[in-house]
Amino acid sequence: MIQKEKNGVIFYQFPNLEKYTDICHGIFTRKGGFSISPFHSLNVGGNVGDDRICVHQNRQAISNCMGGNDLVYLRQVHKTGVVVISDTNYDAGGHATQTPPEGDALVASIEKKNLLIQTADCQPVLLYDPVKKVVANIHSGWRGSINNIIGHTVDTLKKTFGCTAGSIIAGVGPSLGPCCAEFVRYKKEIPETFWGYKDDSDHFDFWSISRDQLETAGVLTENIHISQMCTRCNTDIFFSYRREKITGRFAAVIGLR
Ligand SMILES: [Zn+2]
Image 1 (cartoon, protein in one colour):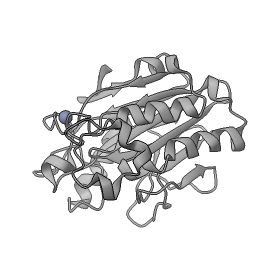
Image 2: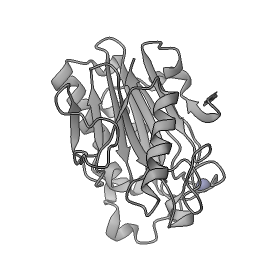
Image 3: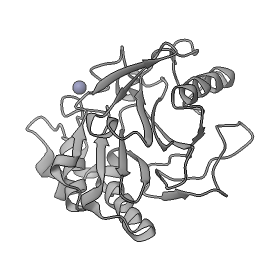
Image 4: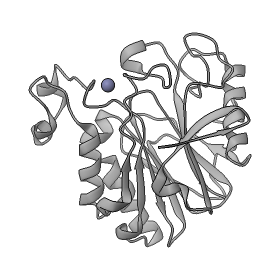
């Protein structure tokens, strides 16, 4: 990952997305924001117990790093809903009075809207098709993984925008790594078709699951970048629900300029 900094706020970029000048994107950290412990400090989660004014200031700081454009949110529910954002249905910038749509993936081909996914261990997955000029941002926790929200989102790009999977560039952001994704109740929670991704100590490799789901959808191996940064191992940089329980959510953002 490539580390950038703007207005004193650090964020990471995927090397395979960084070269495209018609998009902006960033994986933000927990640093550089306004919230106090245990949400210190760049928390964008509005329903985790943090002060609303701090959350608003944090979101504004992120917007400022991403060209000042509106941030578009979802009410993330760990399902497979894909929300296509058009000129008429976007939520303009996290105002408390507006209720974001329910879903776990955002897709847009309109400019100046930055799609934001918030996580603390779940995978944020960024997609960009430079041919059709479409961006997507996916929230894939373990429930999203076993229900293949990645595949559902790529399907939307194909069916709604005529994208070819071979053109899509993908980045899998910081999330719970195979070092920390222990599922002691996996026999009840994870379908047997995924048990091949488990080691002898019941740790699952969700990064490999995402890579395989992207490839099954037709995304080329060479167009996939996995950050391989584990959130639970790096709570100085990222929020981790597994390690901290009461904590914030960091932001993954992508949008057309
Ligand atoms: Zn780890």
